[in-house]
Image (cartoon, rainbow, N blue to C red; front, top):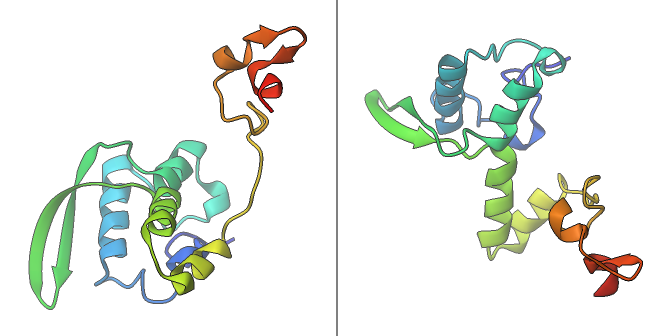
Length: 138
């Protein structure tokens, strides 16, 4: 029943949602740009609202106002979303500690559309005998 601002996204942990944090500034900009009530319980947010929070703005920039130590700055920023940010951090870090920290939020699930083949439906439609291209190349 937690809201975003109450800590519903576990990866943001302590401190990242304080009013003087960069994450808070981004979420505030996101809520203003896309009319998302970050104080509403997550279970009441729409799919679109959750997608914006978790997967980002798809390259669309928004105005982020960030105040640090009394200095107010304005940025044009395209938000990646928390999931994409975690994936990037996991991929780019050399730290086993950071990888381990991120891994606690990861799971291996097969995509229901491609069933783990990582191919578009058009590619999976190509068949060799009775097998699709993924099954044939296993």
